[in-house]
Structure formats: structure tokens, C-alpha cells
Length: 307
Ligand code: GDP
Ligand code: CA
Image (tube, rainbow, N blue to C red; front, side, top):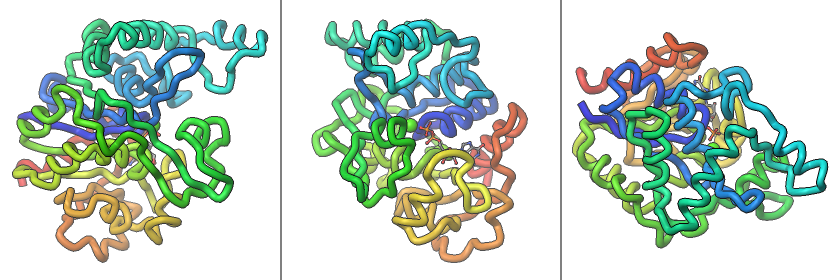
């Protein structure tokens, strides 16, 4: 079975890892968000691709929830001592990845090619694809002004309510090399439990990707990032309440109109399954607190094929 999954960073990475463990690493192609990509200290940082990469390579820091295990922070502390650009924390090991990526991009290598090389160097068999090789950047319009994604998320701690999410470059962005094929060849399409607005939204803003999902001939199953109407972490619940009018399963499903056939929802949200329309609910426990739990969530999403 071939599986293609659209994924953001941390929530998505846990799910993609569970999928790779359950379905086999080589069966999975992950299409990652690049709307969060940011240039820091002259380096190209792709936080969501790296979260997936580190999770699949078993290098992620589970306790901190992002970045690499065994990380040290000497370089960024030096930057801060020197009055340099220190608002975005980059670990020393993580920096090594950004150095290699940045050099390759400057030499003209597409992001998809350097990402594949990084994955292969780290022994990752799952195909990791950026949604696009073109420049695509997420912007948030808030009552305090418009901010690029990381300025809103990291520098301002996502405290501003969001009136609109925009994707700079999306009009002309094409799916990265390999993405259209991965979507066309998949026996099952999945949407990870990632933030629908700022993690999955930028992926679906690439017209070729949205169109591939809309025209699918195989099932597409999304996993809700909410448990009991609350985000496990981050602003997804606040954004849903403000832009979609609530945090029930139907509000999550409403972020993917015509694009999904089923939604994996947590037991804590099973009390209000109204308004899902054609979207079939799959109820299970969705907290991916450990390896068994993330594999169970992956199995629930995969259950669609047997049904
Ligand atoms: P980011 O790019 O690092 O912000 O990561 P994602 O968008 O991929 O993931 C953030 C989302 O993952 C949040 O909305 C969380 O609620 C959700 N999330 C994190 N851990 C879990 C989990 O164990 N289960 C579920 N269902 N959602 C989770
Ligand atoms: Ca992200």
C-alpha cells in the first residue's frame, strides 16, 4: 500500500512516524509545510520539514517537543552575547542541517533535492517532500498588524488573534518534484493532526496539491488536532473558534471542504458528531503520548482501506 500524508511540524511528525512504523517506512510519502520557512542569520530554516526529518530519524527531542535530542545551544548564545539576531532559537546540531541546506540552495539545488539528501544521510527511508520548491510564505493578519509566520508564532508567542491567513507566493507555486506523483500513486491520502490553518493550509494553497485531493479516486482521511475541543499545543483551537465558529469535529472537517472522506476524532469529541455531512467519523484515542499511542492513531487512519 502507498500512502501520501500532508503534514505540519510537531503534531504531524509524530503521526508520520507512527505511520512509517505501522505501514513500513518505504510505503509513506510525507508532503511537508514550507510556509513556516524562515531566513535566520543568513540560513534557510525549514522547521516543519526538520521536525518530520528528526522524528523519522529518531533524533527528535520528545520532552521539549521540537528540535533535536541531546542539543546544545553554544552558537545561538554566542550570537545573543554579540547582539546578533537571537530571537529564533537554533541548536548547534540543528544549525549543521541549516548550513548544509543553505549552501545547497545557494548552489541552485531545489529544496526537494536537498531535503531528500538530508533524509537519506540520516537513514530515513520515508520519502520527505516539501509541498513546493517555490518560495511560499505564510502571513497572519491580526488586529496588531500583519506578520510573517515566525514573527507571529515565535517572536510574539502567537498571542495576536488571527483575522486572516495569507500565503505569499501561493498563486504561482507548483508542487515540488515528486509531490504530484506521490499523490497520484497513493492508495490512501492522509492529513496529519496538524494545524489546519497554518500547517495544512499552506500545503493546500498550492493549487496542484489541492486539485489532486479534490479529484482523488482513493479515500482521504484527516486526523483532528483537537482533543476535547482543545489543541494539544498551539493556537489551532483559538483559530478554529474565531474563524470557523467552534471547535467540534464539524469545524475541523469544515477546513477541508470536499477534500476528506473521514475524520479521526478523539473519544473526548465523540459527543458532538453533528454536521459532518459526508465525512465519516472514526473515533479513537488520539493523544500520541508514546510509541504505542502514535501507532494506534496511525492504525485508526489506515483502517479506512479495509473498510
Ligand atoms: P507545528 O508545525 O510544529 O505547529 O506542528 P503541527 O501543525 O503539525 O502540529 C500542531 C498541532 O498538532 C496542534 O494543533 C496540536 O493540537 C496537534 N497535536 C500535537 N500532538 C498531538 C497528539 O498527540 N494528538 C493529536 N490529535 N493532535 C496533536
Ligand atoms: Ca509549523
